[in-house]
Image 1: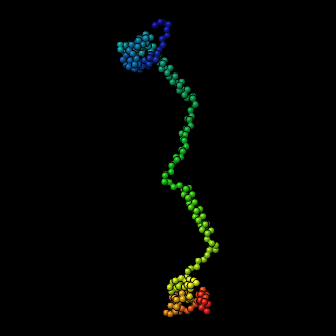
Image 2 (image 1 turned 120 degrees about the vertical axis):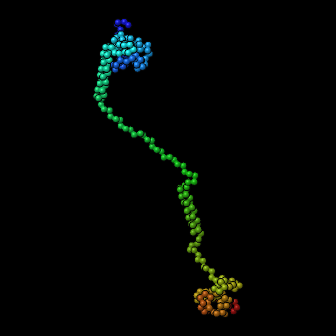
Length: 229
């Protein structure tokens, strides 16, 4: 090596001096720590020995005076660097924590539920009920229009109190109403005469029956008399 070329410590050299600053170590121990090839290791140890950085003592390797001084320089430089780093960290303004952002949540879309096949459609039911009401109203209106106004009173059919037969008149004589009891019971002529030929009491009220001709019966009797007169 030429005298003018400056010797520079490598990373390997600095790590090795750091290991030896704790005390002498064997060659085998230093090989295990550095994990370099033996040939490269031995070559570099010879250069450090020539610069008085290390001293060989059999299989052991220790720091030389140059190595001791250099290791102290390296330690001091490391401490200064650490102190400077701490000062820079202290002088920096305290970083405020970033505001906590709530996770954005997407609005939940209502899930469309399909109606079951047998579901009741309320609108359809109301529509059908309305149509039925209109139809019923129309039927009632038609029935009112057909009925005569004022409505005719239906006279109940009167029947003989004894035989329960109806009264009717005809050209051939018919079977008209002949007489009434004061209670309102009416009789055919034959039925009336049968009662008079018996106990003479009204079948309805039980009172004594007397002849009482209504207007239609009187007119019928007079018409018969006029024929024979």
